[in-house]
Image (cartoon, rainbow, N blue to C red; front, side):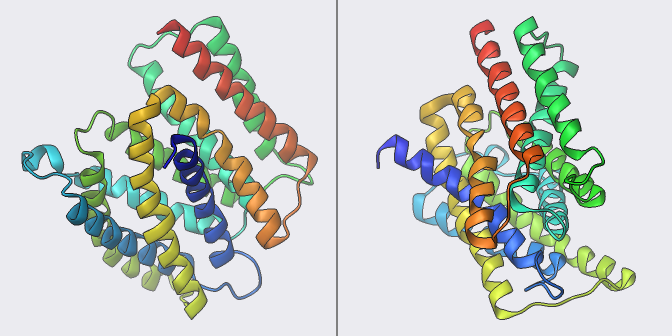
Length: 289
């Protein structure tokens, strides 16, 4: 397949995770599936799909087990991302949720780079300040502001995904490591069930909700990540960061098409400022490096 088409399919898959999550856990008095069950089914189906991909492609063959495996800390970060993501979409529109997730991931990775001694140029600082200021404006109180608890939960999800991404940098076999991490993350489903029972959180799963969770885990997560690693090898990390700027926009369009969600002026302007600021910082860093 042409690289451009593969890249488009990957970004659509990433955005579809937000659309599917919102469709399953969000609208209406009775959601199609509760967030805990959605997270569990998503992680388990993702683990099954990635394990099949590893078996079919022979990924990891001939490598040291230490180099091809994931880790429990990465698996927990993946688990935390999935659970917080599902609970956030109970009260967030698709586009706003994707934008908060994306901004939190980038903030986590940029913050880690600063901690490690990276010194941004003035142009990078300008882009980061614009993006951060727009993010604060997006979540600040107001008539069109998102639910604060749900926004905080999505920020936690983004931080967890950022941590997972940082731990996965430079892995010799990212597909095999991701498959291992998904399989390990499924183990955390058991204590999640215990927490749900103790807290007496509602449990409900319709057939449609169950199928949406499988689609998110097996297709838009499992196959999506496999496509992403193939694309990333060809376009590089910087270009990869830039093309991901399209994900919140695609997710917002998906929310409009499939969930009849509207665009507020705050969402539209903050989206342009956040994505533009991150793009400016990313391009400026590429030139500095």
